[in-house]
Image (cartoon, rainbow, N blue to C red; front, side, top):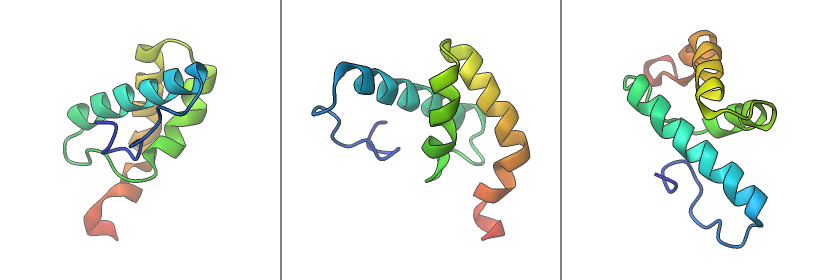
Length: 81
């Protein structure tokens, strides 16, 4: 949900930023379902944001993020902290 990814109150944002925030939430929710072992962790939206800024199709941005997370996912594992 939006709250889970730190987007509690984005009603004050302009339409472009709301669209960006909604894309972040949708892709991060999809990733949490794709990789339930990791799910959503703080900081993922910071990694995804530049990806969706340059990739306009959500499905392409999702798979790009999946590829990125294959290399970075160990940084988000609780047992590695």
